[in-house]
Amino acid sequence: MLKQTIKNFVSRLLAAPPNGPERLARDKHGIDRRLVSRHAIKVCEVLNQHGFDAYIVGGAVRDLIVGLAPKDFDVATNATPAQIRPLFRRARIIGRRFQLVHVVFGQEVIETSTFRAPSSGNQETDEHGRILRDNEFGTHEEDAARRDLTINALYYDPIKEEVIDFHQGVADLKNRVVRMIGDPETRYREDPVRMLRALRFAAKLGARIDPPTEQPITRLAGLIEHVPASLQFDETLKLLTCGHAMDCLRQLRRSGLTQNLMPLIDRIFEEQGGEDFVEIALSRTDARVRSGKPVSPSFLFAALLWRLVHQRW
Image (cartoon, rainbow, N blue to C red):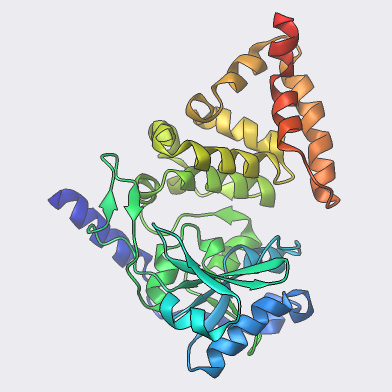
């Protein structure tokens, strides 16, 4: 336990930016404010008006910088869930592991979370180190340190049109590098889904995974088995609907992650013509995703399993 505590402390030191965050103006980050959800901007404006800091965060910022259309917009703030909820007509507090607020505008939901503190070793975990409950609020800098990848630890202030970058995430985006914040093994043990996310973003962005980030994945692949089945299913769908499904499957196989996530994939790929059939099916799925058309999960899994079904038939 002492060894792990020391390792966590060192990881937090390594994750901390030495000179504070980099603040990039619009001419440096290139985000067009007109492409940002007006409801996400509204949430930030309301929180600002009541004396709180608020930023659009994570995947939306990453996608806007590289020229992709975000699927959704999240907000991070120093306001607590209890302070956020009364400020909006339609808002509800959700979550057990991470308590946050869903602010509802018609069909759009803006997920609004309070800045979190990094893992301190005091959170409730299972026997494998996966965090089960964690509602420790923190500072803006701590919130950035606890996010998984540098490219996801980016904050956009829609009022100042400024990107706040604590971990050189913009540089990693430009260089097409996927890099974990802190010690990768510790972060994977806290949440094994991070291994899947690293592979998915590498495929989606045509990026390479930083060697220290990639190295522990094969050794820790078995931790995926202890992730709840519902979360495994959600993450599998994200891999198959990111627009680069075949690249994701090949990376999963190389890393040994299919054994606990989709064990039949290895068998299908070993069948004569199996890999070719899956590649054709997924290329059509990728085309639908990139053109903004819906994808049926049942069709996806039917396509993946068809060779085995046909063989038994």
